[in-house]
Amino acid sequence: MLEPVIPIIKSTLNNIDYDMFYSIGAEAIKKGKLAVCTLAGGQGSRLGHKGPKGTFIVPFEKITSRSIFEIAAEKIKNAYKEFGIYTYWYIMTSKENDKETKDFFIDNNYFGIPKEKIIFFMQGEFPLIRENGEEIKDKEGNIVLAANGNGGIFKALEDEGIILHMKENNIDYICTCNVDNILVNPIDAVSFGIIVKNNADLCIKSIEKSNSDEKVGSIVLKDDKITVVEYIDMPKELTAIKNEEGSLIYSESHFGCNYIGLSLLEKISKQKLPIHEAHKKNDEYGEYIKKEMFIFDGFEMAEKPIVIRVLREDEFAPIKNKDGVDSPKTAILLYENKFYR
Ligand code: UTP
Image (tube, rainbow, N blue to C red; front, side):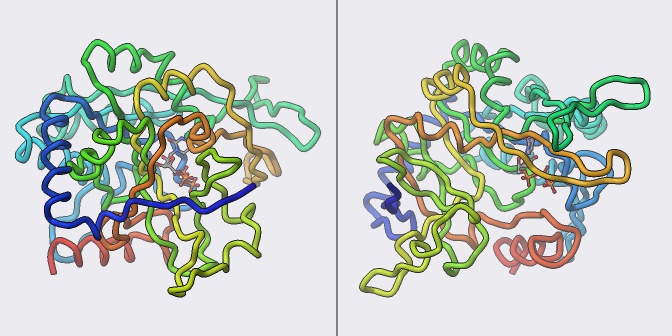
């Protein structure tokens, strides 16, 4: 059974609570309890940029153009100014883009961040298959593999030694961020303070749905467990329900910013996540199926989940498509409106 979640709404905290959460969060950040984890293993096929999406140069209008990775690095450096510590920055790559990503960081001198604070790890792969389940082979007869979706993070964290690294460095949480959201705010002391104070093992940041038809994943309770239901799987009769004030009750949408505690990471990394199939087509392989896991499929295992709703204009400016919605143009407008009005 599906039920709505009740979020903590960051913008409605009173000053006393805001300051209290800020100081709890800031103290934990200063102790190194939080690491940032950028999900950068995707193909970025919709954007059509040659190379890892993080290497895409955002053509700003009011400020100097810079790469998506540089924008992310600036957040780590700003947090250093605020908290006096470089948080660890884990970056998930895929076999396809690992070398190019690492070379980009070397060429950019790690954007001035101490290089030992940036740790790359690689996600796994699944074979591409045909409708009948047959694996696709290349001209040399090798099975064609592709990144196994952002849900590949959990096994990769374990296999690539990141969970061990967290334990050795007393890191309690990672904040996973989609590489393509240039307004994402992972080192957010107020939200982190709420997480620490609640001893939450999972915090999903949400933004309020702009309307019932918006094509975003809904954060809901399913049989009392927190989960994200994709737009197409959400029962239409539920999405339109409003409360007495006229607001949608299934209002919380997932935008790819999640704080996950070490214990939950370990738990999920030992489980098999469901496999989703995306039907695709390209010139090289014709029609094929790409198998993928999704990061949010692990969330049902959380014992103490919370949802913090933040303001869309503060934290959400995705670059997904070449033109139109969620394109560099729309993201630039949002980013410059926030910082350089
Ligand atoms: P998207 O679903 O937007 O996929 O990923 P994508 O690969 O970036 O873009 P398209 O669909 O091909 O156009 C959401 C986030 O998950 C990461 C992406 O890098 C992005 O930050 N991701 C996705 C991975 O890290 N690994 C994957 O296998 C897939």
